[in-house]
Amino acid sequence: LLKKKLLDQGVKFILLVTDGSHSENETSTYQLFPSYQMSKFLGSFLNLVVKEKELGLIIKSKKPGYLSSLGKIKNLLLEAKKTKRFYVFDDLGLEPKFFSKIVDFTIGTSVDFPSSVIQLAIYGSKCIIYDFSNFKISESSLYSWGENKVIFNDLDLMLKKFKDFMKNKNLNISLGDWSKKIYTYDMFCDNRGGERIEEYIESLKNGFDKGKSAEECLNYANKYYENKWGKDKIL
Image (cartoon, rainbow, N blue to C red; front, side, top):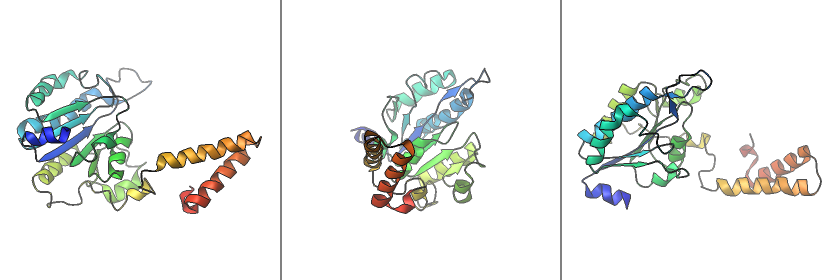
């Protein structure tokens, strides 16, 4: 239904943007994504949907009220809504994967590694991480193959690459493409993760019910998992 609404407005390319926790960071106890930078990040896409008549924009916000708390983009939000090609979802519990069959591309950010982007990539979506925090050291492997392809720390460069791709998908087919490396984040890619963790927890519980020690229970659960899913799946 959402996709149809966008297509009815002449949309030919649908972008999903995910945000993260942000703050003015007035104390040093817990530093989040700076609110002024989040305004710049989101404002870039709000401007884009206003200018590009064939673009549909969905923002999946982390929590209710996050967008409205960004006063610097208040007018842009109003302009974007007038296009009828812009939707905001801030429902708690609504997973990003819900949009995997709707959108053509996802761009997300966070003060740390954005799991929302990885979830969409696992579901086969083209995705980009905007790495404001610069976790190049902790994510050296990702940067080694994905720098300026699936992860950017330069917002202007990322926007340029995305806009070029939006107008011609064949121009840079590697942009946002995780397909050759996504197994490093999900070894299975079969949507059965819930089943596996349920089995693992049940194995642990059975051991405790029999009066076994914590170490014995862990060894048993690990062995059960290894036998069923493969030794290479135990890290």
